Image 1 (tube, protein in one colour):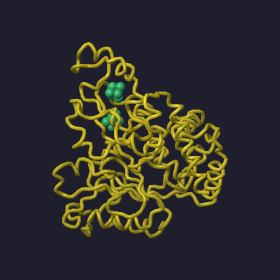
Image 2 (tube, rainbow, N blue to C red):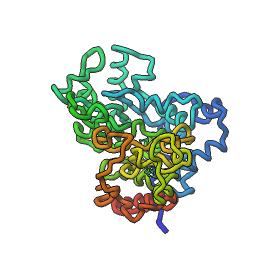
Image 3 (spheres, helix red, strand yellow):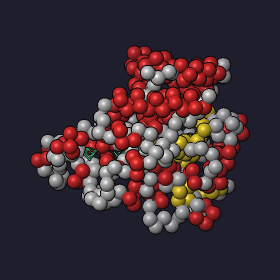
Image 4 (spheres, helix red, strand yellow):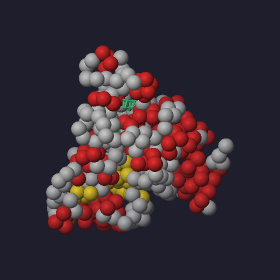
Length: 381
Ligand code: SF4
Ligand code: SF4
């Protein structure tokens, strides 16, 4: 039995502080939720699911709800570097806005090139104004890799022709927390695939502050919003794995929670797409699934408001949340025959470690993650 009191006290203190700050948005979250046809009961259900996803006990549910309501006290600056904008699109372009989307929109989004009305000089002024006004308070989210070759000139943004690398460094300087959204900003993504002529890198390679990496192409809305919620609730970034990914989201392999795992263990495989095994929902390892090498919570959190995920839809995982997956996991529809399925993460500092391999009960994994939160807090005191 773990003692969550210290975590609770920290969260209460943080929420008290936020509630005394002025709201940066005029419409309260509850009004937006009602206008979208979502009732209070569904909001509380979302809060309890978010608490569970963050590996927090159910007692945290009212605090998650409170933190969501107070999200408009936290300024968010969102930069776009070398990328396709797919991470933003997947989060914001749902035909039916989910609660994750609504809560993301409730954050005080001070700068986001895709969705803001301003352009050109005015957009640049908006960014400069936000960085100055909220210095030391804002959360910085970055989508896209940073090209570093030729002193960053493969990416220039705006009328002043600043390089993406220079903008990133300026924005990182005054940030209270930095989140790399997606595999491109986390590890370089497709821009960094060999031969990588632009010298594209993950943003942590060019700034000297802690960065939370949300690997995924794209990362799920749950992983983005959950990480932002953690920051709102505790005022700090969550515990991370060796690749700086939040343990609550990337603590277990895709393979460990996959609904096809029983077939893997029984040796029942799809031999080619469309065969009898595919119709029977057999394991996709032989048609290239990289779930055994990939750390992410796709099987438990899923995409599109929790409706499905790639393996459920019939295609193997391509390892999109892992560093260098474009090079190291290809070809995507062929197995990596030579590689041991117990990856280096299992052998080194993966916090759950091999003990959890093969355990598909999410509750057990969540409990293990929560114990790390509590242990880390104890260590910090
Ligand atoms: S190899 Fe892929 S499809 Fe098979 S059990 Fe693992 S994650 Fe699921
Ligand atoms: S199943 Fe694999 S490839 Fe698909 S989103 Fe999850 S980690 Fe990425």
